[in-house]
Image (cartoon, rainbow, N blue to C red; front, side, top):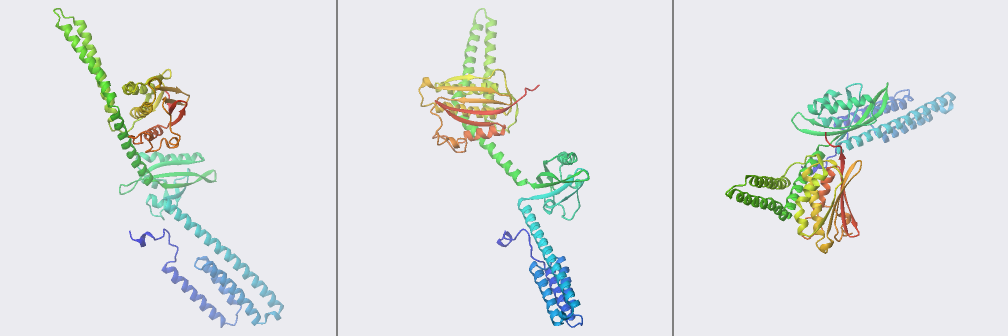
Length: 487
């Protein structure tokens, strides 16, 4: 795009060529009229003619406010000059006529000036409003719940891509709305019938060429007429915002997956240990079963028990591998009713070897019963694994007998709170204010994204995450909304 095009204003307030020619034509007519009247015997009609023409020109909003004031003063001056030239001061009737005429023209000039000033201010405010609507992609709309007829601004017409001079109705909005979003449009008019204090809705628009737009409308009652609420609303084109949010969501999902895979890399020893345990049990059970069958008198019952242990161990190994694959798999988050204690127990089994390797003593205090939350199981495990690994690694410089990891859950009427506390050195006060900010880390090999990802996941689940230093160590908390158990 050229610089000329980019510097072009949104709204042009200069006169068109047609208006310019019209202004000069009327000016010539006024000039000719004054010349003709100057040669006529009744010179007192000159001022009246000029000011009447001025009022006419002011009505069509051609002359500026300075021109109106100048012409008004010139007319009153011409009255004074003609009064003196005609020696009207010698006749009392002429004097009273002069005063009456001067007073009338002064009043007319004053009213004309005020009217012109109001018209200019109104026009200026209209320009500002139109420009602001175009800059913000926000239009105005008025409607009521008793009729399908509507009215809107030019920017609203541009958003819906209708001609600006075209009468507006509810059916026109529905014609631009996908069928599955019609319920949102109908709901707006139903709420307007009930006279609700504020109406807000978001829905999509389907343009004739197949493009999808997203609009957001907020409306409040402007006034009532015959027991009917008239609503004034702001319609915003939020297509760019929605597209940016979708891009951010995809990028965040990619980053979350990368962090999850990186965490799994740190848990390689724990995963190997989890898999080796059932494999060792399978091997020993198979050897025992073979010995029971190799006897001169095979003990089938013992062999069957050994085969049962093999089946159970294989199922356990399969469960561990399935859990690891689920953590490594790239999937969209799906929130389902889950028992928070089940997620915690499953996650603790994954990091059990990590805790044993660091000689950490766990203290698990789960709330009695099972509190339910609406959560994506994999993402919740990612948050817990990250916090548990951070706690384990923070106690690397602490004496082994003082390494204590505490995991607690508590339940209120509205939420479930999970606390993970360690006995490490605590959080550096300089790092504390930006603890959940991306790329902030206290580990040399850390990316600084773990806690930031945890915060994003918890906020996606409509919860909160925070931390605090203890006398010995640090404690991390996060809360999730509590739901009723599914039937």
